[in-house]
Amino acid sequence: MKNFFFFSFLFFASCAWTKVDPEKAKAVAENYLTDQKKEQYDNINDYFTSSFNESESLEQKIEKLKRIKEALGAIESYELKDTKVTQRGLDDPSTVQLVYKVKYARGTADQTFIIMNDEGKHKITFQNIVTVAPAVLENVLENN
Image: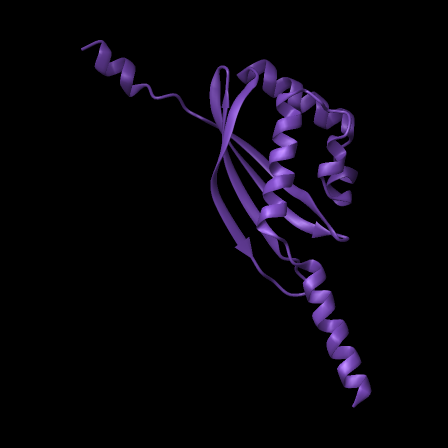
């Protein structure tokens, strides 16, 4: 009976270990965006899971961020558009998906982050950037 309680405790403790706190996930994403805005790229690997860092070097990440800035300009502001929490089991870790509307000097993009608990720390495991097309309807209406 003692073994049952011990193993039950271990199971519940391990489940709590993999949970993701939406507020901590938000802090990770916003700190990353702030560093991107300030062009402080030296420690950006700290925001990503070890598996993400293995697939893309620091130099590759920095080069991508510089290309984004070259195309869209500097980040002016960002705001959280959507949050989705997914609770899963031990084999498939829980995640928080955050979607931010990021305003750049020459455009806008939606940035999606998926954050997970990676060995006790909240880290980005996925990131996607999609530029938002400018409203061409305004130009059509102004010319009529």
